[in-house]
Image (cartoon, rainbow, N blue to C red; front, side, top):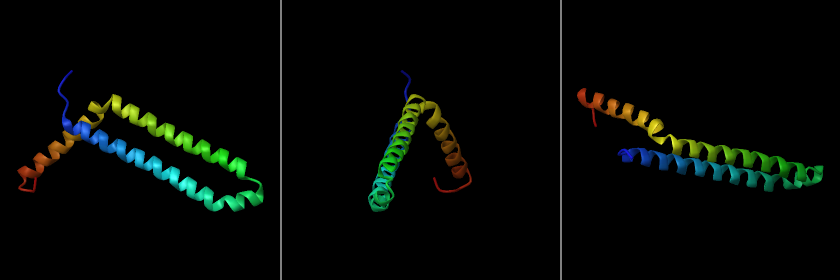
Length: 101
C-alpha cells in the first residue's frame, strides 16, 4: 500500500464528524418539532401519519449520510488528494508573493 498523506485522514475524519453532527442535529430538530406539535397532531388525528413520515425522512437522510461517508472512505485519496493539491499550490503561490504561509 502506498504512503498516504496524513492530511487526507484528517480531512476525512473532520468530514465524518461534521456529517454525524449534522445527522444528530436533524434528529434533534425532528424530535423537538414532533414534541412541540404533538397536541396539534393528536387533535387532528394525524399522529400516526406524522410519525411515519418523520421516520421515513430521518431514515432516508441518515442512509444518505452513511452512503456518503462510505463513498468518501473508499475514494478518499482521490477526493481529498485533489483538495490538498490545490491547497498546497495556493499556499506556495501566497509564499512566492510575500504573503503569509
